[in-house]
Structure formats: structure tokens, C-alpha cells
Image (cartoon, rainbow, N blue to C red; front, side):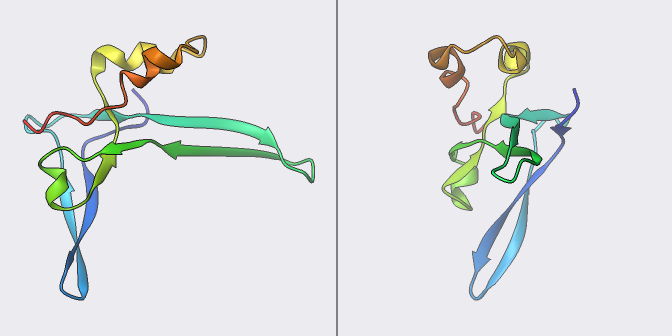
Length: 102
């Protein structure tokens, strides 16, 4: 799956400094983050492309560093998330949850 990652980083404040903290799946491997992408016309008429990674509350492990984390999709949900015809907000929101800490 394009756009999948193997690790993500968050910055932990330690005194006056910030240190990068690495997170990944315990068994390794790739995972996909929930995101939105759109292209639209600006007021000046140019076409712009934009994207955003969606976040949710942190799970227990990430909460030690930050209060939120990216939405990490379950592989079983990839097709539902990527389906451009899926405009069922309730269905999409069921995927907007923290990954289990384990």
C-alpha cells in the first residue's frame, strides 16, 4: 500500500530540549495512517493539492510522550477507508480510534 510507514516519531520534552521518540508495531512491518487528500481551486484560480494526517487521542504508550497520535488503520479497514464512494460518516468514524497499546 503506498503511503504506509514502518515507524512514526513524536517529540518528548526533556527539560528545555525535545528528543525524538520512535514508535512502531511490536511485530514490525508496515502500517497505514488515516489521511485526507483533496485538490481544489484557490481564489486566484490555481489548482492546489492538500493533505492531512488525521489524529486521535493517544493510546497508553504514546500518552507517555504526547496527548494525541495519528489514526493507524487496521489492515481490514484499508479498502473501506480508501473507497471514494464511502461517504458514511458513522462508518468512517468507527476507524478513528487509537491503536491498542499492545
